[in-house]
Length: 437
Image 1 (tube, rainbow, N blue to C red):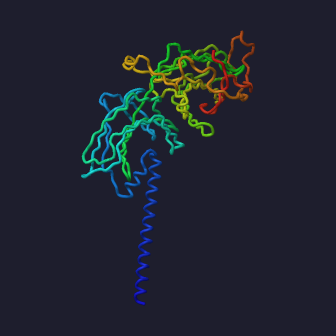
Image 2 (image 1 turned 135 degrees about the vertical axis):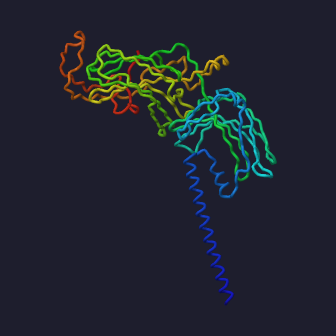
Image 3 (image 1 turned 30 degrees about the horizontal axis):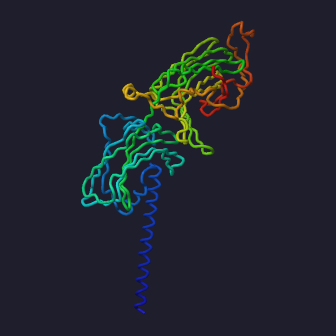
């Protein structure tokens, strides 16, 4: 009987120890899962599985990896936004350029490093932020640097990806990111050692001298007729937009007029299509009421803004388009706008032009032969302008054009011809058709 009681006491002690160990393990697991969740929110592209293994099992990184590119001292760099909106500088490459360099493996602990192979990859991929689990790779090249074995000292490997195709420009937007990077991996049984190096790719284009201007007459029937003209339909990123606004008929009190550059990013397809509008720049080009026959000049310098080339249906994942948005506001704060799409392209510098006989024309840009798309940027139903309650006198018109005297004039509730009523900047509104002249 005393022995039986002693066994019962021992069993109860073991139960307590098991329960304590179990609770500690559960708490530790919950902590690491929470850590994974936080890291995934901060930066989804990091190797969370490797972090969990190294933290939970007590393994640290036993070797350091460094990627050094050939010609890094003389190669240009370019700025690009990171996911958190900060600007970073990385080495700049163009389509068809060779990417080469060396990988240095530095052992941090005495002894040997067992591995299942060492490889380097050149990857171009598209990341949709609403689909973070899937990365869509459009370029993937792999070089095997070492077969399975052991590393007993610091080792250096050379690599070269000759004449790499880089069809699209690097881009970081509101809902999508297109990136190129080198990734070195030392394959191990528990956790791989990984090092990535971001690269920036610019696509160069060449358009012929024939660049049709944009000319369009829009307005509100019997109230306002204006004609706007832009000198070109395609502009390089350092170009100057030159144009004018000509007032053919003015019967409403216009308070001011402004022009804005709008970037429209479209991602996904079908029911999973997302559109994000961003106003890049906004200028007030007129303050006060215009008169019939008045001409307002426009001059917008593009060099000072964060612009990218126009991208159309990139790998069937996303598009980036740019619009000039002309906005008029009357004295009752009613706003009207007209959007016109323009094509932006990247122009190569002189030194690079002399090296290449035929500049590369990316397929996702508008070709020079087809020219700028005809018609308005978007088509939609006509919107009606509400009747005005203003009792002020209308603008004086020439006697040959109308026989009305200086009496009050209410704009009719008729469809707007070529212009659209808006509440804000018109970034989400639909436009109706109007013909280019």
